[in-house]
Image (cartoon, rainbow, N blue to C red; front, side, top):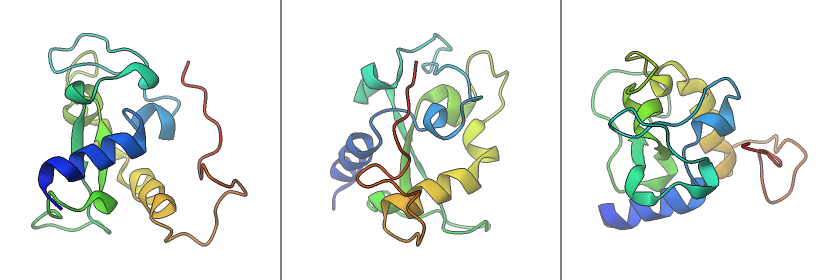
Amino acid sequence: MRVEEARAVVISRDGGCVAPLLDPGAGRCHDRWGNEMPRRSRQSALDLEVDRIRDAPAMGKAPGHDDPSRMVALCPGHHRGVGPSGGVQWATSHRAEIREYLARHNGRSEERDGVHGDPLGSVDDG
């Protein structure tokens, strides 16, 4: 799969930045300049970034850019720490939650939270 195709798959699957979905305390999304972004359902694919996630904590090379099963969509604010976060990178400190989310979406979890279709259940983003 080409990089562009993988990115499109990830953004379509995630439906926007996953931070507010996985962590209600994550705060609002912000663009690369620190400006507040629209809520998840109205985020443009052009505004989002894709983060590559290892299966377990490790040093070294990250997974390839062509494997959607190891990637998530994030706004620049949660990915790189721009905006009011003062440089704190949400994605770095929430790797366990992201891995769990990917495991559910990739069918690697025995526990599906008792929900069919949407493994995280219905989440109101605001």
